[in-house]
Length: 113
Length: 145
Image 1 (spheres, rainbow over the protein chains, first blue to last red):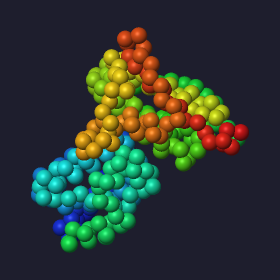
Image 2: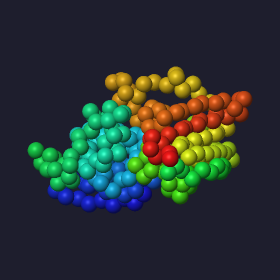
Image 3: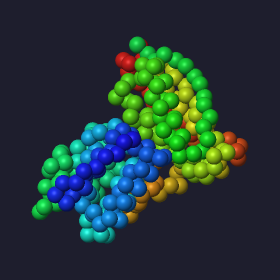
Image 4: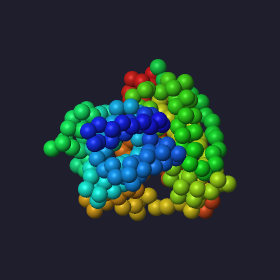
């Protein structure tokens, strides 16, 4: 998995690319998110457009991030959730937990409200 | 037109990199056998769950303990077994991950996902020397020729 990010209007947009199945790739994502949180960046969008699929380890990272950001008065939003990941969020009932948007622009805009 | 049948097994150390190694191996073998693209992700995710469980819980992340993968491709289905050297667990005693009290837990969803994505899931304790989990995915009618 490759990971890049950008900042836009005070919001960090993380862009993982590939599969999130555990192992060192999951650690990379988790560490990057923690670095952002430690530096006070608590408004985060994860763009999932380039994520082929993820498993429960990936979900665990999302939940952990959401919990940590909310405790710091921040928020995590998901953008470009693919059909396969949408299916995973649905069967695990996590669709009720995460805010997801059809584009990064849409997700970023909600932080301004 | 069915899958090109074949059978092989591989042994992996219980290290974090194993889940990606297994994923690459399966991806290559299943594509070569003609496995439907739209079913690949379900299998990949399910196997990754079982492999991670074997590495982390079954074998305690001990690199000297091994995870043995067996891939059995038949014309109308695939059967994938993952065996560890651990003490096993009771798959029916796990907390319900979709219960409201458990929804925000960071762990505990793996087997639930496997059961949702695979057609059959079998557990076999190997006489106190490990646990073998077998996953079966059956091709839809018309794909098996």
